[in-house]
Length: 459
Image (tube, rainbow, N blue to C red; front, top):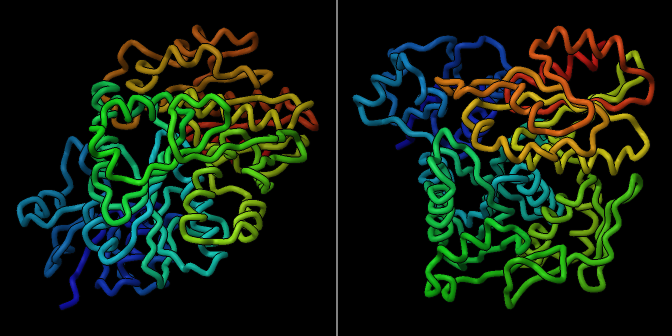
């Protein structure tokens, strides 16, 4: 019998994507959202999904499964649907993806603190070009799909594997690409050790061929291997990738990027005798691509197809996304980076692409708890920017400010031209007053910064 599933918060990017996949797999799908219009609702309605505005317990009549956006778990005043869903024991989120949509599929998960969305998309588009016709769930919009999800027909399901809230412990992958591990999400993980334990549990959920593809240059990956039982490591297929001749983690099977070229015209490297050229900038994207190459070769995809797909890959939404020039002649970028390491690496990639331009970086810090936990990492994060503006911190789920503000980042950054400017309106005025033709502006953050980026682009 066809199961009925209701998505609470269906207008969001993640929920809408999963809803489309559920519809394609034969579920009877409905949903609701507080907003009457979001960038994702139109495609949901076109797929034949009934969408209600607002929340009401009546939506759950005859519903078998209630899928709830994670944000609902943090509401101080629970929504009526959440209350009833708990009473009826039908409420779920990531477990729906793992238990239902992944069922009978070979799941390839992409995990790690940084680069998950880019790597997942890079791999999915490569599989698409290789006629593998994968199912895909990713945490960003892929431009060629105008979506963060792809309906496939094969047994392959490529999934971005998120550690927050232990979401990835709902999956049983046959392959994991592990980009890197750094401490993050202090609002959920009380310590780095607790984060590592979660990654260890994820890896130990490998099934089937049990392939683990890892970044040998990540200190966190080394810490993970020190935590994993040696007996377990012997039972899985571990393949590493590195950018150096002396990786932090020594493995029997690995590939290495050599003859690396990073300039404004080219991002390329060799693996053995084969050259790969990327359509995106940044050394971190070479690292991302190495994991993709291994996964593709494991699927017996020819190197010529891999080369072609990687060169065509131009990035995804909100990952160094070029919005265009404004009327002042400045080029504006929108980026999701909010961890100090991600900020630093993105600025390096932007400097590679614009070696002689004046770069203004505008940073919207994300959560007081994260800023406090990672404050020391901001000391040199802005090195590749000519000037920096730090906005007010986006509080998200935080209930305390922990004695932290944007001025804390300004104080520790040691950048020669950094200032705290909390209001978006003042930042737009500043840009009007100071930007000139040829300047580059990048707005970074995971809160409301995307709105600021578009305001600056529209000047």
